[in-house]
Image (cartoon, rainbow, N blue to C red):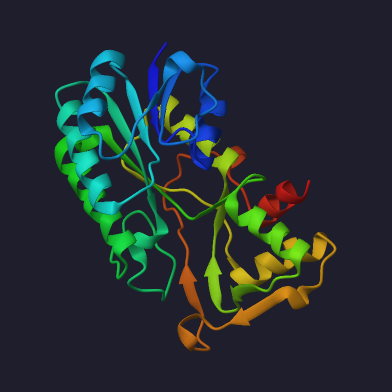
Length: 272
């Protein structure tokens, strides 16, 4: 049974990955403050500054697969990943790195595919671009890049914020002209499992196969929670009336249709 080490196993995505992979893989994980849903003997408290402890965990565990869904200070994360790949480059382990739509936030004129060159104007996007580049240079095909859009789940901060805003009658800011795609935590976990089991390589854009304006997505959720749409404060992205895109699309054909999802599927799941 292959050993999987999930870095950031106590977060939204990390917990979904643990639940999905615990049957079929020997799953270990790290956490920063709150523990994960892994048995005590298989989880390790680890901060992104603790690169020496990271090396100890890798040495003891000898993982076949490492999945990085860490959060935290960008400079610390970059150093952490450099130390990680220095350790992994002399082993046979594969590294799955969760990246973001923000690697394309330098141009909102269209959705982007895996073959488009990243261009970012944000610190977050540039940090992810630098990580992606470094991982590819040092691990080659053993570095698999997973770019994802906004992640939703029944326990996700985004969904909790909507319900809390409804409860307290607080306004929610949304963009009426920003076209996005989204993804569920559990669907990401299923798709990543498929990628791992089938030894797929390269860069993947995961997300809903369709795209929807951010304001419309929130409208559908709030209307079905029996609240007034008047809670939504519509704004223009970049204060312009043009249509902008903050979305990924894929030109790969190796993720089966049974693992694809639409925005409507996401909304139905959240409300179900």
